[in-house]
Each structure stands twice: as structure tokens, then as C-alpha cells.
Length: 131
Image 1 (cartoon, rainbow, N blue to C red):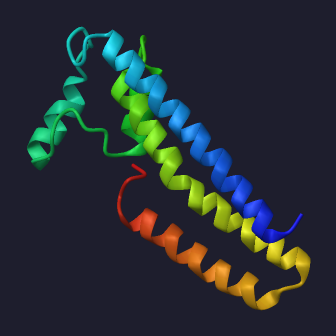
Image 2: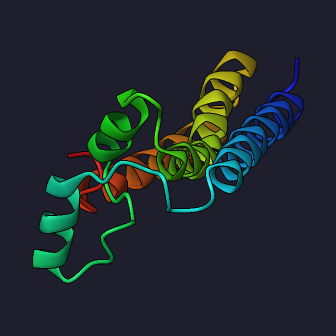
């Protein structure tokens, strides 16, 4: 399979998966009557208010994970997961491109894709969204 075809498939499947997760999260949120009826994560609310951020926003992967492991899962955490999958899809496609270009023997494009991938990973790490 060519690198172009592989990348296009990864982007397509990632887009479909993220849209599916987003729609599920929106449906559960609407069925629950919006923010009403949802148990409040007091710790997240207090830390966000202290930092001057909206208390209903999930801003790290750790917060999303905690929101998903609650019973029942927080619909806003499900929506945030869909957004994370959407943001991660191009990164996964770029990693697949590096492998595909290396297999095809196209060193120039493999190196360029590797540099772009490294820059993306460093920027995600430095943004502080992992904690």
C-alpha cells in the first residue's frame, strides 16, 4: 500500500471514529438534560476556577480519563475524548507516513515526516495537556 493511500485511510478512519464519539457524547449530554443531572467534579471545578478557566471544560488527558471512569461517564468527557481523537488523527497519520516512506525507500520524505512528527509531539508535550 502506498504512503498516500495509507495516510488517507488513517485520516478517514480517525475522522469517522472521532465524529462517532462526539455524536455519542452529544446524544448522552442532550438525553441527560445538559449539565443538569450530572454529578459535579468539585476538585476539577475548584482547580479550574483558581486558574481562571471555565469549570465545565476538560483541559487535560487526566481529567478526561477521570470523567470517563465515573459512573455514569460524564458526557462532556466523552465529547472531549472525541476532540482528542480528532486532534490525534493527523499525528497518527504522520507516524504512518514515516513508516510507509521508510518502507518505500524514500528517505527524504521519511526524514521530513519524522521532523514534523517530532515537532508536533514536542508541542503537545509542552502545551501541558497530558497531566
